[in-house]
Image 1: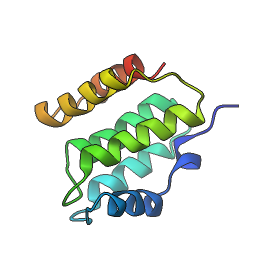
Image 2: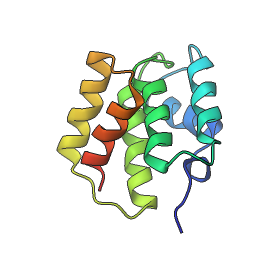
Image 3: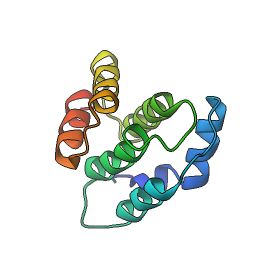
Image 4: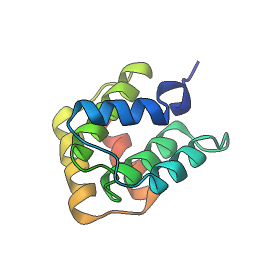
Length: 117
């Protein structure tokens, strides 16, 4: 059975995780959009994760800890799906998405699939 992202994390969980990294919510519109996309049963789990990563890494909704929050979510996703993580590659991808402002969901999804198998 494949666990959905929405079963893994809620918006409240995301805010609590980020607060643990010292951040505060600045704007939640992109997070709300990502959680709306997560509810789409036609999308695969990596694509749903990609929408959430774009919201966190590109739109920077938190005052601090965006990359740490994204990393934590990816590791939780891998754990729940019993996937192996190339941690070095995952960190590289997260930093790359954030620095290059990569907005294409397919690109983000591809990067996540390569780091989390």
